[in-house]
Length: 112
Image 1 (cartoon, rainbow, N blue to C red):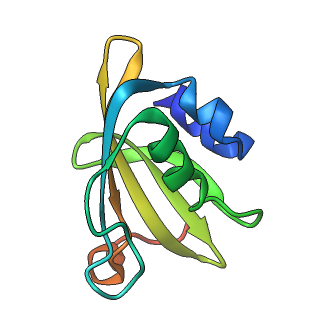
Image 2: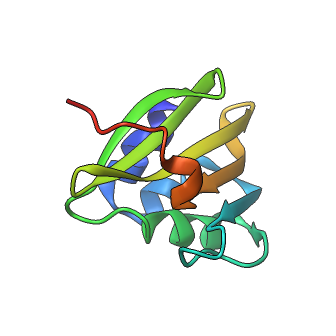
């Protein structure tokens, strides 16, 4: 989890690819309110691009509990903009779930 967060902070698709399994799959949920990939994204290159696009210069990433498991929370402009859960198989991330839907992010509070 920390390797994934560090790679995200680097802002480099290459850094992110290095922690992703070649066959990784990412699923995102925008709830029809936020732009999200309409279908699962397959492969390390495509998933790295998808995740890298979420991280801007103002984005703050923290590793926090997400559904009882370690996850990554992205905050920008004082609000949570995404919550990412991962499945790690061996040394690499094999699945990524990204919640972007503002209705589902309401209970997440800004860090103080």
